Image (cartoon, rainbow, N blue to C red; front, side):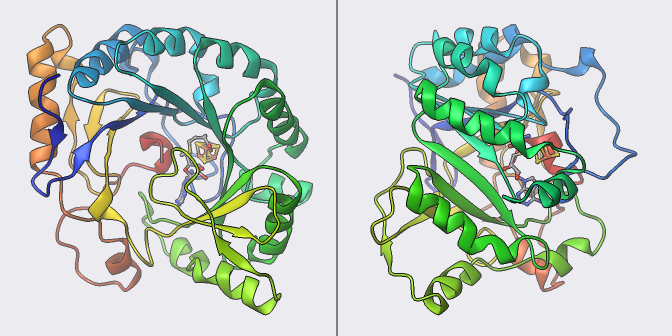
Length: 334
Ligand code: SAM
Ligand code: SF4
C-alpha cells in the first residue's frame, strides 16, 4: 500500500465521513433553522459513482473506515446501493451510518445486508413531546422502533447521540443513564457545537459535559471507565457499575481532542473538508476521472489542516486564528 494520509502534525487519516445529502426530514433546533434553509439542487450532489471513485483512491492510501451521514442519509434514494458499492472497495473494513432513525426500521435489514455494520441514532429526548419540539415535528415512536429493529438485525454497536442543551434536555441525563443500565446500548452525550451559527442561541444553550459526571456524583452512581466501544473515536467512555450498556462523553468545546483527529469529510456537493470547524474546503468533483488529481487534492487538504479548531475561543468570544465555516452541521454531516 502507498504511504498513509498524514498531515503536518503527524496525524494519520484513515476515516472518511461522507455526507450523502444536505436535505433532511427533520429540523433539529441546533442544526438547521426552521425555515429559509436553501438546499443544493440534485445535480450538485455527488453521484454514487463519484463517491465510490473517491473512496477507491482513499482506500489505496489507507482509509478503511467510512461513515455515511447528511442531512439525513436515509432521504437519499437507494442508499443501500451506495453501501454495496462501498463495501466492495478493497481496504474498506467498516461502514457506519449516522441517522435520525425516522426511516431506519423498515430499511435496517437491507442496509445490514448491503454492508452497514453499526449505527448511530440521534435521540435528544426520551419524552415524545420534547423530542417533537427539539426536532420540530419528529415522531419518537419511529426512532424507538428503529433502535429495537437495529438490535434485532444485529448492528453492533448501537449508539444513541444526545446533544446536551441547557434548559432543554439536561434534566434527562438520569433517564439516559438508566437506559444504559437496562440495555446494551451506548449513549453518547455530545456538547452543543457552534457550527454555522451566526446568532447567540448557541452560547445560551451550551453545557459542558462535566455536567454528566457531576450528575452521577450527586446521584451517588458508581462510574467506572468502560472499554472502548468500537469506532468510538474521540469519546471518553464510562459505565454505571453493573450496567449492560455504557456512555460516552464527546466534549469538543470544553476539551478538544484534535491531537488525535483521524478524520476527513466529504460534503454532499463534493467538497473535502479537512476540519469540521474551519471554512477551508476543496472541490473534488472536478477531479473525478483523474485518480492522481483526487489524491493530490486530499494531500493539499491535509497540508492546510489546522492543528485544532477553536470552539472554546468562540465560546469565550476570543479572536479566532482562521475563518469558521458558514455551513450548517446538516451541510457537513457532523
Ligand atoms: N441526520 C442524521 C442525524 O441527525 O443523526 C445525521 C446528520 S447530523 C448533522 C449528525 C450528528 O450531528 C447528529 O448526531 C446531530 O445530533 C449532531 N449535531 C448537529 N448539529 C449539532 C451541533 N450544533 N452541535 C453538536 N452536534 C450536532
Ligand atoms: Fe436533520 Fe440530523 Fe440535522 Fe436533525 S441533526 S436536522 S436530523 S441533519
